[in-house]
Amino acid sequence: MAEQINNVEDKLFKETFSRLEYARELLLRCAPPDLIDSLQLDTLELTNASFVDNELAEHFADLVFNCQTNGNKSAKVSFLMEHKSYLPPNPPFQILNYQINGWRQQLKSKLKPAPILPIVFYHGREQWTELPWKSYLAGMEAAFEPFTPAGKYMLIDLSALSDDAIRQFRHGFLKTVLLLMKHRYERDYLLENLTSILIFVEEEMEVQVRTEDFQIIIRYLTASVSLKWKEVKEKSLTLSKFSKAMTLLEEMKLELRQEARQEGIKEGIKEGYELKTSEMVKLFFEIFPRHSDREIAEMSKVDIEYVRQIRLETQKTEKN
Image 1 (cartoon, rainbow, N blue to C red):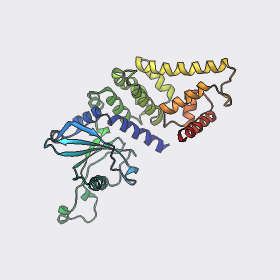
Image 2: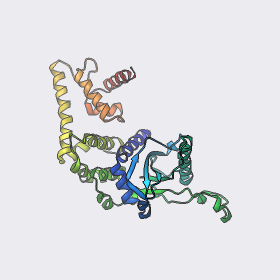
Image 3: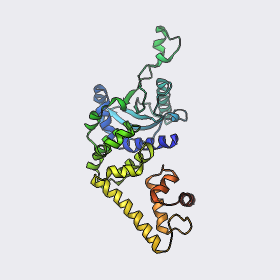
């Protein structure tokens, strides 16, 4: 279950900050002014690179961007999300390994290594204190300092950002994502404030254009926080676009059930389910790829064994 939650949070992180407008805004709001002044953020460009190796993958997911400096040089800007939601054991050492991986890749590609700016995005419960690598070394003396790299990084600690500060961000979807990630363990807070959190993405979401935003948020809400589908639905009914999307899902399920009844098919029996019912289950596989079979069954109002059967058939089809 913990691995599934991490996957959902990694996916939300990547789906959000792979959009350049959100990556730029996070930098503008959180990075030191001298760093912002040294970068031409309008040249920010997402790459398909990753400097995370198997060992680092236990703690981090990354997005790597190219960016020009004000001196017209090339630099790498890396967003790293700490996806275990607790403090890694030796952050400076892990950051040094990350940068070395990046420089090694560039050298292998016959490229002159570019600076790598590591930005750690943290949303755990413990307080993260930035310390240089020398603070983790036993027997460290002043004479060793010139030979000891600092392993510095830029930290964005979501818990240190106030709700008011987050609400000042420009993009509604980004505000919604940051608030949900910050408060994902606080069930009572989410139940009380979910409508005001969702209003941000509601205000800018065009149902026909940004349907994926709705899917991303609902998938995250129902998979990685302690709210149930029914609770999310009830809270979102006052929001017109969310309500419309919810209603479409409910109408689709009702229509499929009615057609099944007309053909003499009883609910809850796995044999002989009407074709459109299987299409609905496949749709939920697509919208909620990290949901378990039981969660899909509850949403579809079908038997869990039927969901497992459809999943196996879908996997076989994809392989062929």
